[in-house]
Length: 131
Image (spheres, one colour):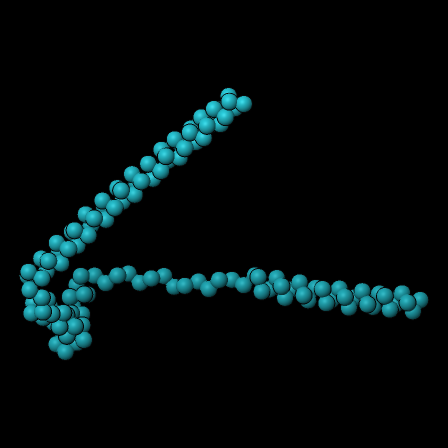
């Protein structure tokens, strides 16, 4: 009888251990995702203009804008801008030609592969006919 009680007691302990492990595993997988608040509406034009009008003249945004506009005016001449524009146009044209050449090369490779297979087949037929 004592062995039955020991076994029954042991089964109860095992059952409790298993149930606690199941609860822990389910609890970690069952966590809810945090719901983020909705985004606020973008400001209206009136609100933007009001913010701009209330900003101080030494606001960092305005000083950065002023520096960049001075760089554009004084730092680079119109001929330099024109040269960069032409350089970028040339790059785009060459890139387009490169893509066309790539497409043509892929097509030619496939044609060569087909001709090679046909040649191998013909060589095999000649060898079979000679034997």
